[in-house]
Image (cartoon, rainbow, N blue to C red; front, side, top):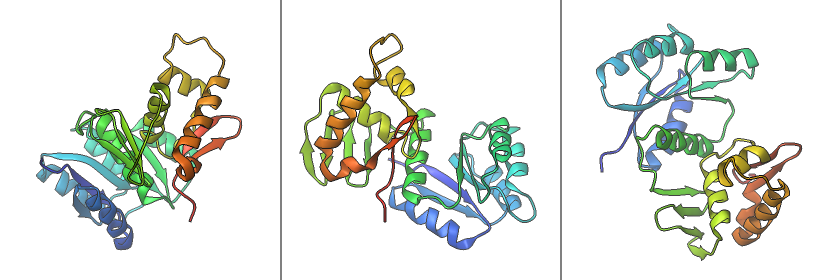
Length: 227
């Protein structure tokens, strides 16, 4: 199967190498650009790019300008990277049609997980492929989960809950959002059922259950293990 091609744009060579290494390790083909002008040259030359990871602050042409020009010609998924955490920047990114907005510093593993989720949503990556994160592997087609190579038996709802967490790694998911997605919009039960299922799921995942973190006052999110 041909590898999906991703363009990484950042003026910091170490950052490009870090992101590229993790993407290559996850079987993506990577092209790199050190500034906005080079990024556009590659965009116009390469007709089969699957996704662009784009830094905001760059010489010659910043990420906003690059994103604006790309959006005049294509709806290719774009993930914006920025060292700033200004809400106005984030809103501007979404106004320009950015698919994801990630602030530096970030976990490369979570970035790669977000890349996979966006590509699956856009239909470019097989939705039935194995999802993998920090020793947990999940096959949607086989309805099978392993932790560090050992099979884990999950109920249907526990499995669907884990799928949802693994497709949204690093994102805080409200109980309402989890209910709507995993239990569907016509579910009128108590949101406490989520807490019960999360507790059971954590127990079955063993030490990896700590990856599912409680976000007080909101719900849950799946995050990388603490260093």
